[in-house]
Length: 293
Length: 293
Image (cartoon, each protein chain N blue to C red):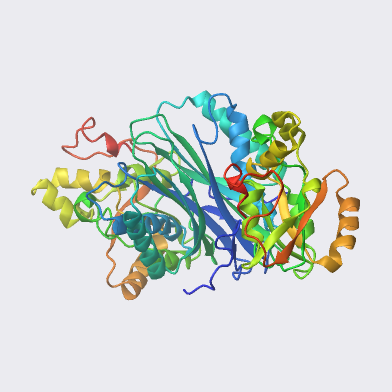
């Protein structure tokens, strides 16, 4: 995953090798904002690493390989240099781990007023196969998720790893077999909507939902509450994707061989027509409004 | 300059064609911030166009061709939709004019507090020739600038055109002939420092400095004050670059043939050693601190 070092640091633009030939390019952007995505309880290293990892998760969701990034900082003049160095160290460490070059950026002082720190990353990448789009799912497809869901506030807002290897594996299959994919950032309930074609809905196998240990802990043994955490918490940075029904068994076997450490769960399937809201005994529509699929 | 439409709008990443083969990629990022780069006196269309054009000016300074961009917006909830649509329209118009595809982005609501609107663009581009870096100037090189300088507050903070054609023309020559280039954003006095190798300085032909009409107007006929505007105002979005002495005459002739409408001025040359501050009668060091080259 090593890249030739970019040129142009301190120049008008970063100059990057375009060694990927005819591959498709990917670009994504995401920010971390003090008092919104993190606060003083979070180490600057963790905040910096999160900026890199949340962007890399978007590349993973397309089945791509991350390449290089530019950083834009907008911040108050009272941000301490030591804090900033630690934020940068967290970014640098995550970049090293994921094979990303931080190739340049821009710094702007914030208008006077409230304390402000906004770090925006634009991350480029490549995709040698057809990228995994959010569109393409069909009726009958199995819906899979990686890992476990919910309770992320306890341990996963910062301690997660973007599923880059898994994303590339998914992209290596033809698009008529692995059909649609995205990463779960706003909660499965909200994000899964984007994968479901108009006039269809998700039929869940409720017993199978991989509720995380953290979500179980937060819900004190209440299964319904635990499911709410799994569906609504967000910041899971897991992948949710659709697989053609005739490929489901082979796919599951191939996955377990390749990623024995990454849990894979079939949580349901896509069906034509049907209720706009999945039926589940005891789920109050008002209370679980995040579940309106 | 037309590009195939990107895919992936609304997806995790923008998916872009990588049709430039073995060319080098460029990436740059820059923001516009309400109350810093513009205020309520500026139309949202102009502010949006400026975001595109100031990034494109960085691509121009490398001799590149702009390609596609992702936008990150961080803003208070009280920004009006009509204003935002106009900002977007200004961006879209500038993108069309410059052959840029706006391929995706991210939107985050700002933490509560002061009104906030920060738009950050990451712009990609390509460079088929060796890019024009800031490094590479040598003693004896002629220093050229495009256009005229200073007084930009009167008319040019928003009404400028990135010198994309001119930058590509400069990049089309071998790097031993056209040696270093950048765009003037912080004022010639500050920016030119970046082109001058250690142990050298700029010797100006003070009479030649192309002071803009606006700078002359602001200085009321005072030549010294007009020069200060030309050197220190910034936001010129003109190119400053160095040409080998044996290519100077041919270069000038070729330029005038190709860009009869774009003023080209030789403002001085690079010399070895010498004073850290250029001598100029009547320039007070304290008063003109921006001139410390």
